[in-house]
Amino acid sequence: MKDSDLFEIESSKLATSKGDAPTKAFAAQMITDHTKTSSELKLAVSGNSALQVSTARDSSHQSKLDKLPVTCWYPSHLSR
Image 1 (cartoon, rainbow, N blue to C red):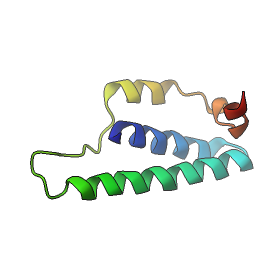
Image 2: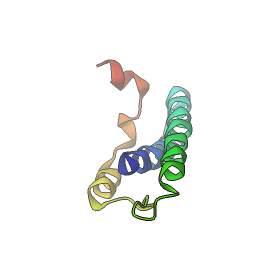
Image 3: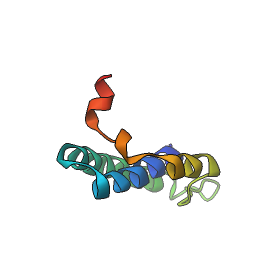
Image 4: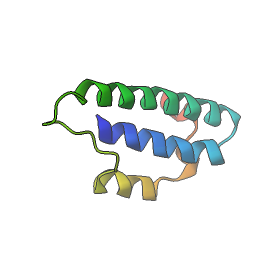
């Protein structure tokens, strides 16, 4: 879950800087939602020293982020 949250946050930050108004609104909600779930996960494992939540993306998600075209960040792509 943490890798997907980090990816969604970072890709949504890209969308907020380069998307149109509906895209920016959608991306802002994605940032809010995934920041919340990341915080909840960190809190849930905070008392367990055997579990750690990474703050870095894995290479697979970083590669996807590097290749992400801004044009795919239109909420309308969800209905296709």
